[in-house]
Image (cartoon, rainbow, N blue to C red; front, side, top):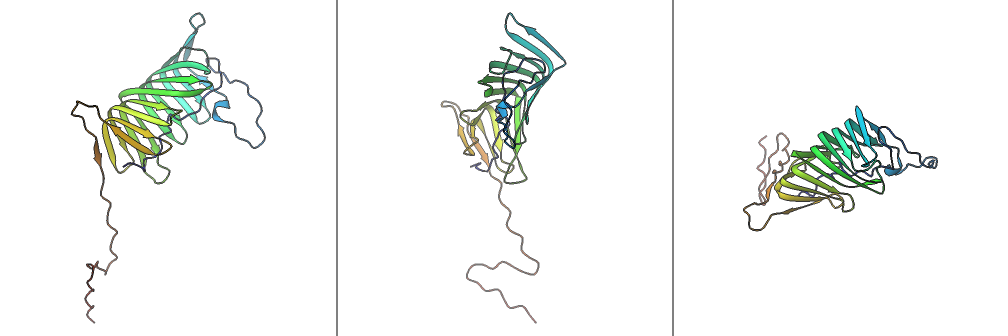
Length: 231
């Protein structure tokens, strides 16, 4: 029903070669002239007001942190990780979390847990009251928007799962329910309810406006001829 909903790639970021905490840019092989590097091979920068590393527990904490790689940008009031690099770690961002990614998508949440595997994001789980995303639709000037108490982005599946008070719009039509799954690649929305509950899926479709009639002209009923215009 919402096949026109713009692809939510706000979390669809291919992130990160291995990086040391607090402002690190890992070296990589020089690219061929004119060739663009994959996002995960671009250098990562970590900027923070403060950082604390515990080598015994292999954890790191940041305050007022901004992590960027190419067009991808993650910022939050606080962040802590279960590893000191992006190759295989789990990062938790808290407080005014914002994730910006190409193409111009954004995700805002109170908290986000991001799992990195093999130097890229495998899954991002955002939570808030509510967590929100938005992205310009490529086929129009409208914005695709959605919100839910929890939003899970699965990179391999190419899906965004909105649960608990989930809502989506393509800029015109709306769909809401307890669980909405948006397939980014197919641009398809699936809605589900839980058996044994009174929760239902709601869809609001805005009527399309009829084309305006040029001045001096009238629409005729089928099979009827317009009366002659008096001279």
